[in-house]
Length: 353
Image 1 (cartoon, rainbow, N blue to C red):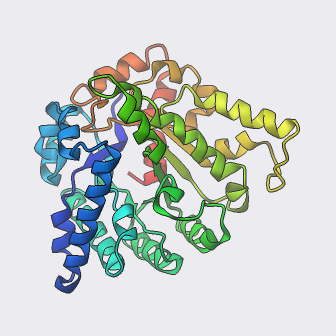
Image 2: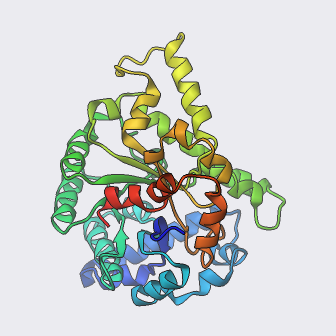
């Protein structure tokens, strides 16, 4: 049996009120306005359905566990599941809120990261936040990364689809100081599974009770993310950058790497690249999964050192509280040394846990 499990994708419920409480009083109304406006936008995207009502369709035991919102209780939930450490992502993706604020977004960002750190303070060796860094002002983002690095942070979470929050794509040179700072700090960049506006149109057409067609699609959109990091030459220019694709699963990725390699070998021109596109993936990118035995059959094509396991607590796909059984099922017939790398070793190296 594997002796250590590290989940590189687990979730924390951070109430917007907690962020508000950590902001200066004079700026709290600006945060309240942004939260209200973002909620209105989200209701419109969901076709007029209240997000709380929509989320209720996915309720299950993990969603009601107090470890979802309390650090000390999270440790108990992890112990029940046999998980040693977790990389934590907030359910509040505050990037949209920051873009809606005329003032106070810097303070809101700092407050958000303080709340995440407070959750992890229950045991910083086992609870590792992926801190969200806004990109509205690159000088501020650089200073924030430097401050986080000085506190021992190992992961920076930025928007997976920058155009969705009104930002240029990541090959734009305005980001270069930030990429250089993150690489120098030996931190990783998290690109968590996210939604693009076009998928909400699919949601409105999806006739299944829990919107299964809709929820099966987002992982495949991370092909776009792989393409934007590699093909315009961002990873080639910053060989120290490490990109973690969170929740993509595994099985489709070798196909996409073959596609972009064949494009580079054919009539397509990628002047920023000195090697075939997949080489940058194998050097600088990581994938996470929960339950993907078929994908693990491709582990040598992807690189055993490129894959990391997660529980996705407490989302519907979560392996909690049966993670060890899920791991044993997924890794049947796989050598122990490879299994140990994927379920713990790679994450331990990348995040220092």
